[in-house]
Image (cartoon, rainbow, N blue to C red; front, top):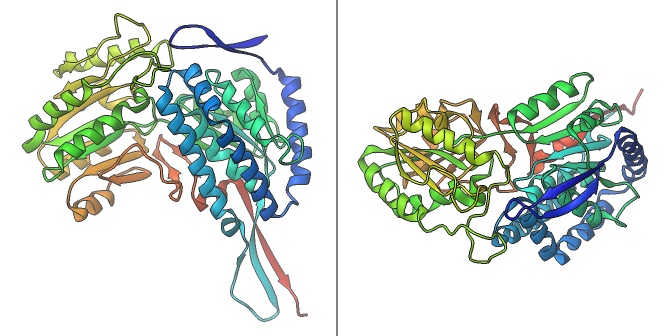
Length: 457
């Protein structure tokens, strides 16, 4: 059987790849273990040089990779090129810090004792990656895992399997055979890999439901799992905010990649003093988006990757309207193309509306007024999710005060929907467990080993 990937824009078949069965997956795991047995003993400096060659492959093939991203999931080509650039930036940061991050921690001298903590590779890492940022999500695991001395199996989304194949191509010849392999498999076959005791770590990025299923499957044995799941990320626009800057940034944070981002701005609370002005300006910005062929350089919003997404978003909007919200823009799938959902502005949205509580993953901006910082804080924390939160203000002390009480993995001031690879990417509540990126990203991909030698009798 083959996995056929269709373009969400024109329906053409972008790729047809053979599906791995359980026997083939088992063979790939065995091959990965053989690669690990060699790779684990390669000094970190040599691993770094090898990964640099893999990263150079992506730089050389950047346009090809970007066009494959656009073809598979509909991201506008300008944004796909930016994703390649951002992937390279993240890889380069992890390369820059790998030697210091993976170096042993040497404890203070003690008479007759040698004590240190080594960061040793785990073995074989299974990375189950999502489609919405198919390069960024994969690179967060693949590069640090290989730098740490592991072998990697990349099981990419059924929407974007070519991205997994590109990682294999990039690593060909830069390490032992089987160092980085891709799996093209059904959920059921992937579950057999999660249960396989030869897999030493599972990284999953996707929905809460999918993450919990992976977590439950992994719980049949003792293995660590990293989960990056959903978000319902709030923004608060304080009365002293630079309003024009905040509007432009928040709208971009909600609509970039057609809102298909786990850290997209999905609900906005605006101080009542500037609420009407914010809504008016946001509408003007949203009206500037150009929907169309994602291969067209002028397109700023492409189709949604999932066929069921437009109806789901329309139902969220209807629920909000039934509860008293006002629809100022958009709100229903495009008449011209079933996969397009126009930028949508909802005002006066009550806190119990579905669009304020469940992840949208689309270009909807629901806005509600608040009377003060405390009300904003309470509403921002009123969610099962906790990936990011942003505060828009000219006052750093206001941002610091709110950051101490916000329940999220990343707190922004005057920015949103962005990752800094020097900071750990992590979530609170149902947004996940574990961390990627930064030096902490290496911790989940290595095992701490305590060296406790007595050198004197």
